[in-house]
Structure formats: C-alpha cells, structure tokens
Length: 605
Image (cartoon, rainbow, N blue to C red):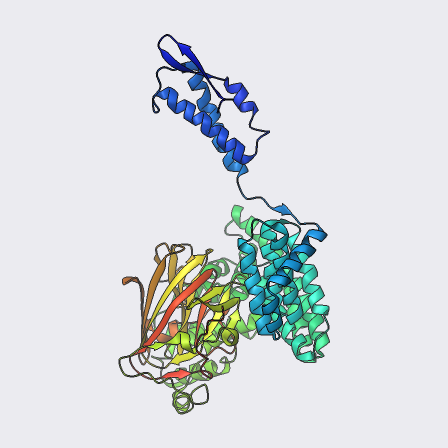
C-alpha cells in the first residue's frame, strides 16, 4: 500500500497524497488478474476515503476523483481476465508422470477391473476426478487420457468421446479432429465379431443422433466408423443397413442445403410456393414436425401434399372428415418411396386412430385394418386389438412376472434398476444412495425402468438437477399408449409430449416455470386410463404443473423417444440429474416386470 498511498502532515491533520490516475492505469497491462484485482481494490478504497465513506481528516478532491475511473476500469479488466482459460496440452514427459501417478494411486482398482463394466466404472470415476484436479494439469490430462483408452479398449464410443470432450474443456487442442481420429482408430481395433457388431451399432446410433441435430459432418464420421466395425464383424445385414443409412444421410444433407436456401427466400417472399414446398417436406417428412411443416405445405405447389395439408390444418372433428383425411394421407403415401412413405402412413394412422372410437361399419373396419398394417412402422402408432389385450394379460412381458405390491402401498422402483443392465444412453450409477444420470456425447442420458403398470397409478420422484441445462423427462405408460412427461423441454417450458401431434412446448398441456439447478424437487404423476379416454395429472412440489384429459389415442411418442426394446418406463435427461427416490403406487390393474428384478443397489461408487 505504501507504493500507492503517501502520508503528509498538514496544518489541519493528515491527508492522503494520491498518485496520478495515469500512473495507476499504466500498471494494468503488466499485472496478473490477481494483481489487477488488488490494484482496483486500492483505487476503490481511496475513492471511498475521499467521498467520506471511510473516515479521513481531509482529502484532495481532484486526486480522489481521478481514482474512480481507474478503480472501475480495473474491476472490468480483472473480471475479463479472470475468466477460465484453456491451458496448453502438457509435455509428453509430464503426461507420462501423470499417468504413472494415476496408475499407482488406483493400483488396487485397476487390478480388480477385469471386465468391461468394471473398467467403464473406473473410467467414469477418473473423468469425475479430473473435474476437480485443477492444481495439476498433467494429472488432469492423464486421467482423461486413460479414461479415453479404456473406452477404446472396451469398445465404448460414448465413453471415449466423452473423455475427449472433457479434456477439451481444460486444454487447447482441436477437439473435433481428436474425436474423429479416436473414433476411426477404435473402429479399426481388432475385436471379436460380437464386440465389433456392438461397437458398430453404437456408432450407428451416434450417427442417427447427429442427423437429428443436423450435424451432418459428424454423422458421416460416425457412419464411417460404424461401417468399418460392421465389416470387421462380418455381418452382411448390418453392413447393408449402415450403407443404406449412409445413402439416406447423403440425401438428407443435400436436402438440408436446399432447405437453408429456401428459408432465405421465404424471409423475403413468405408465399413463394417452391420454397414452401422444400421447407414443408423437410419439416414434415424428415423431422416429422407437423405443427411447423403443415403451414408451409399448404402454401406450396405440391399437387399431392398441398390439399392434404390444407385439410389437416382445418382439424376436422367429425368422424367423416377424419376418415376422409386419413384416406387422403394414405393415398398420398402410396406415391412416395422410402422413409417418406412411412412418415405419411404414420400421419394417416394418426387420423384413423382419432376416428376409430366413433367410427362404424366399413369405416371402422378399414381404419382397424390399416392401423394393423402400419403397426410395425412406429411404436407410437401401434394398436392393441381387444383380443391382444387379453393375451397380454395372460402372458405379460418378463415371462409372466408381476411385481407384488400390497394394496395401498408403494413400490421402490430404484430396487428394480440395475444401471449397467438398464442403461440406454449416457452413464448411470448409484452414488451415495442416489441414482445419478450423466449425459453422454450425444447430450442425452436414458435409463429403462423395467416395470409396466396396466391400470391407474401414481408415481412420485424426488430429483435434483445437479448441473447443466436441458430436459428431464419420464417415458410414461398410459394404458395401451405411452407419452413423455417433459420438464424443461425448452428452458422454463414443460408439458406432455406428444398430444394430438403437437410437441410438449406447443400443446394444451404446455406450462411454464423455472427448474433451478441444485434444488431438490418432488414430481408427482397421476395416470388414469379409461376405455377410450385418459387423464394425466402432473404436480411439482404439490403445485399443479401439467394436466391432460382427452382421447387416449392422442397421447403418443415422438420418434425421438421411440426406444427399441423398452416396454416399460424410462428416465430421460439432457442434464446431470440425481434421483433420490422413485416410488410407484398402483390404483388399479397390475404392475408387470419387463425383465428379471435387479439386485439391490450396492455401495459400489
């Protein structure tokens, strides 16, 4: 402080002798953020002394005022400089030292980790520890490098890519190039056929996720890795499927480029028919976003899609109009080929299902037959005839097993979950008595809850969003239908996905309210299915949040949430989440187990 404050005796007492502002400002560029912070604090203190906020016998107004701009500039400069910056990748000898340290520290765990699951858990532990190792860059880099190597060894592309993404948060290197190189190296790694097939399927899933995000360059890289691994697996059917997906990817990229050009035209000419046709086809036939796509098709010049879109936008409520519209979509679908045809058949099925409860005679027969024909196209369009429902009751999933719950009691569903067995995407593990979900490289975490309530029930979930932002959802059975209760489908927006073809952020169930990170909430879901109607009531901390009552057929799954092999519930998250409790109380019907009960959660983590 003596460098900045000089004292001198005056007749009226002690006064501050302040150095000129120019001298103070000249110190900023050469100082570290911490030094700049100290400097601006001194300037601010001097200003407060001069203004009388800190007592002094007398002051020099000119000198005092000259320090206020300096203190403010110091605060701004120090704040900008204090933002976390990435560090250079440590030297090879430092990384080697870090690896040796990690191996020595985890010597016992490494010896025990003989299987893929144990190695995966150890790698996740290293990734978590790296986040808190800020004082030793070499050790942090080594932890993430070794986690990536485990992903390479066990053929887990999500784990491998996540380790690279984490390293990219702290160190300066080309993350995308590193991910591409790692993925191709992993695809070429010699593996048994079964492991190579599994790796190929995981890469194909990453490709589909990239397509949904319209990240076509990364989708091609995932497709290349999937093809290489499928060839190594010597699985002709898988190779053929991946080649077909690659061809569709190429077509989608070309179509996407045309759509981007069309959007620029529509910004200037909203009624341009050809631009509307391109945008409408892409939104409806590729993204299946009918709410946004139909208005474009209605303004297009497509001779088949335009009339159907116009009638669809009119939302017929009478059975005759609904059947006619379904017939029209069915006829249009016959003129299409490939995935576009399947999408249009699903739209026709959607309208047949709306009309079916009130349909009679030939209309009812036709709707039932065509719904049966499209049942294999999408889980969201499957129907269960009365005879099939009886069969399902006599032979439920999971080999006829029923979860025994005393009347009026609740079942702890966490006891039915094995994170290793029921993981769909991302990472899940029990930690401190809680179930923790961590999104993978695709940005999502999914976990199968292997129970299927057949009647009315209540579900209670205590959860905390521990970090990040994004949706927290539950795939919810409603009689023969399924939907997703989605919190923060967009920031502060909640709802049921999908209702009558509309997503959670734009349908009658949409509600708003902030979900805070770090706060524990209690989510309660009450489901009451009836013959053709259903109600879903959702509350958060005992406050009403979402409500639906209407035709059961209007509750559907969007294609993004159709998960092969999942017949029960599922947890879905695009942020880090902790599940403290998960309890189910049946009100009617039975609760079926969709696979063998899981062992009780242990204290593994």
